[in-house]
Image 1: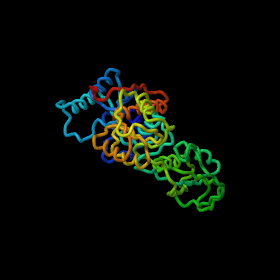
Image 2: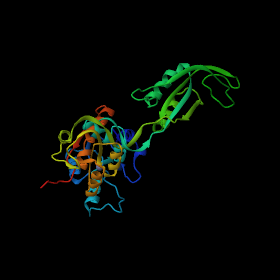
Image 3: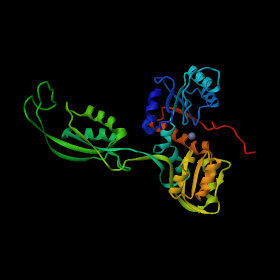
Image 4: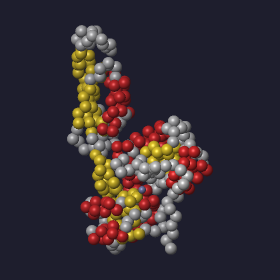
Length: 366
Ligand SMILES: [Zn+2]
């Protein structure tokens, strides 16, 4: 399968419009037309990861963190980063990453972290985007209504909660008069035509609207398709950093043991009050110190994230919040098997994939 097709599948899960302005994410290196059979999945793209890709003869590397973040002025072999990029291009390996869009999207980094830590009833800790919703109404001759309904549903229109292909249908009479130069599906020029039609209404998310319209118009028998689009004030899907939710009330120390087991970490750094039972848990994969106050506002008993600095810990303590630093790497690596599963399902097993689970810098607790 072509690299660009894999990129398209990932963009559909972690859409481009969720990428933060400061971020640099997406298709970073290589030929979009390259045939890809083998993919290496990793959190980062380091020299070690590149060597692994060579060893397993991977055609593509997919990461969470971007390899190219700041703009490059040259690609030489004079510094480690440029040398790595130079060698990747020479080996004709394709590089793609999904960063902030994968943090924010549904079933992305944060949802996965919350699921792994068995947190229920979750919602975003810090909302950054709400998907606008539209009502789409289209008028279809009755004998084509099944076909159009299926296309609308297959392209993502009509999702309400866990229900897909939701539509409402009313039958009625449509009228039209073909004018000079037309080539009508039914009727003759300058004669008023009456046709039994179905008014199909459904709901569409903004991100799907263009694709749904294109497919619908292509499949519709009429030369000029009659359809309306209404903006809605119903709340659409919300996307944000971190998650807040609940666990069964247990002593903090029991839950800390669970975190270590589930994230497969040897140690945690716990700031704040240890002797308490906890129920409300906030998480943010990676570097989540910016959302300490959000965790507090949502009434979290503890906040699990990575990259907690001295003053972050002090701030958490002032707020009465227990903060658990489980490490940037360990709170994000949970996404790798989810990417593998997603691509396996979407490509019906066409790709061979391998996860490289050792891209974090080496360290010891001495
Ligand atoms: Zn990260």
